[in-house]
Image (cartoon, rainbow, N blue to C red; front, side, top):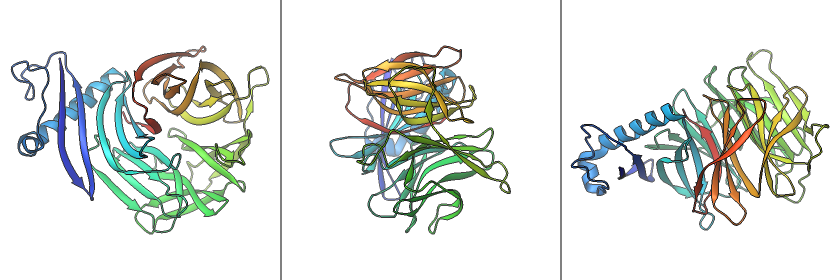
Length: 371
């Protein structure tokens, strides 16, 4: 049985939401939402205002709980390429849609970044409105029921990562047109409170980031100029920040090099994600033959090794599960649909499978693991 609930419009901080919750129910005894076995229910805004607000939130909770049992959920920020409008999706690891919200703002790709605060169950979306210096940080509830925008008032920052053990954030601040610093953040209300830890090599930019909460390590994927810009080169670096001890923080910059035993087209890593279950840093790369390549990265040497390739695709962001040794990545297939891939890294030989295909032409711009 399939039921769709179109929840009420809300007005949170002048941002208008329309929440779409898709529920797949095989059987729900004594259901408060499904009566007389009606397979498809649509509720008006007025009806939901009066009767279904709490029920809708109950259903979101029910769905997320079911997704946790089945494998987990993750957040995806998507862009409509024809309008640049941003939307938020919550997906189950089986590819089904758990929740949806139209966010009411747009952005220039790729000037957006997503991370998750697991302690407070908030998704942090950073929108960098180039060429102005201000950024807007959107704190979005895991169930997409609220959004709080915070404007930086002059400070440029990006690539936030949440440290669960310290209940704080690390990220990159802008010190000059070509200068970037890795910084520790304590308050995002303007003026943003932060402390610089170290500077990046001049004219190098963090293109993607991830965090090892177990060891309190920040990983930043560095490019000389941003991918897609005229000055970009194939050379890349990995920033490894050891920040467990505030009194003895250190950051290494490793040159990323392909494992010399592998004779493959030199890939360019686009996204990175730390897998806690596998205790490994993974990257999603592309090569000049049009393949999406999963690589493992040695965090002490910078040497990366190709694990498996998925041919004929354009890579979009990747996220690692916190529960199992697996990663999920979106790809846009050449001449075909957008797909969600699952990489199984639980053994010495990685495998890949297509979890779901989507007929829309939306661009996934950022992802974050929720549960």
